[in-house]
Length: 286
Ligand SMILES: [Zn+2]
Ligand SMILES: [Zn+2]
Image (cartoon, rainbow, N blue to C red; front, side):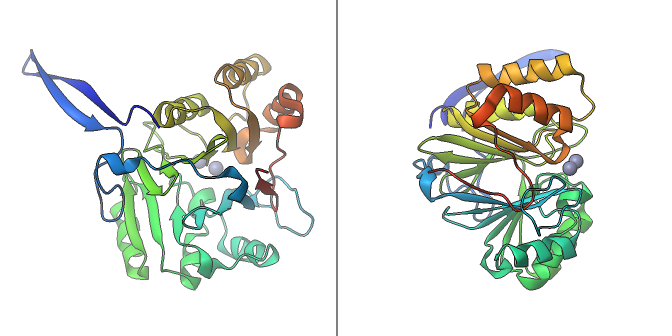
């Protein structure tokens, strides 16, 4: 991993004059409870990709027969130091039912990461916490205070995220991006490249990809999740796909809010490297 420590310059404009402040800092956020322990501990070696699996627990696109589809997104990451549920779909009963059908025990989840506040990503949270509240929940700091109070009452550990942070060995949050709708994406650093998982990509999928590459400093093995491209024109989509190619993204798995046309165009461009992501799919990296 590169660029962890660097000298940065903050320019503050105060009372019409400008003051230059030099500050030695890390790109990773400061310690909050069990988050980043110190400036250098944001760095841990890449994980063996072959040990990692990503199961799509919740998506509006179908993949495996017998797994329910509904608007929203959730996936489970296993084989990492901690078992992580990224987003929780829109409906708790559907989330728990799909977990059951996929042989996932919610009690085995250590960490829940919420990409952003929208209901189709947070709706299943409390159904999951009802079964297992011995988890740390990472969410954008901008979530309302009532959310934090309610979460604390369940016994779960509240982990508000602002800057990029280490979640467990080899797994990071991009930090909160965007202005109108604040959102974080998940990064898994592997020996084959980085995996980026997005909820809805409201801050822009290109911005998220860019942030992940900048933070970790290696190529992207897989970018997957909601890319928020529904309703975009063909030329706009082609430009985004070209950006993916230029950024060296090896595999793509657009789902949830990516839109049918985007999924078709990505598939045309990426061929065998396109991953058809839908409810019930298990992605492995052998
Ligand atoms: Zn959203
Ligand atoms: Zn969404």
